[in-house]
Image (cartoon, helix red, strand yellow):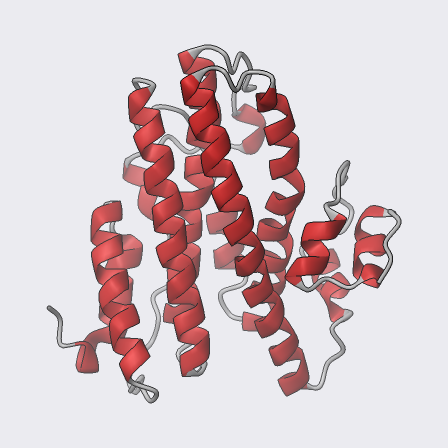
Length: 277
């Protein structure tokens, strides 16, 4: 057990750079226990590292998004495994993003720290469920190429927490709420296959818990807007600055986004879709 009074941020750092999810889980639980018991945490003389590569770099071949192989044939073990691997990679990346949200912004309060450590625990559980299915299909994490989009977003927003809350939970995670129902529709007619049924069950769990994650991001985004004296509509200025506003959105999940904290004004602007408060 670490002397967390002195080394909370070193423990977080070790968790982030490790490519072992079991180590990430152990250290994250220790940090959550400590933060739950201590409101004031000493961050004097602490300067966060600027991570140059994601922790999965030793396990996965990283390519550009356009170089990824098109996923198809979900009724075959390899085809289904490619989909499971892609989702597992998102969840793995989300572990490090949640931990980094605590590590990189030590000025934030106890509630903030606990929120994102709890998110990290959820993401670890999501990853482990998907990893077990991947193994059942005869594959492992790292058998398919990945891209580093989420890691890149964390690097780009490392100096600005308001941007981080806008881009990671309120853009990328919220986009997952749009996409997951579409994936479930594609899988539904193959649910008689046990491994497909298992994936459907996992995706339902992830979907419900990701709504809560986006809610937390929404809360802290609006909290920071209030602290900085900014209107929450600055969200669209941030998306524009990161060249995300013009990205095509074929589906916008009105119900889930409203539950997660988005206003109808925001939803209409994102998807040009009907929405009633």
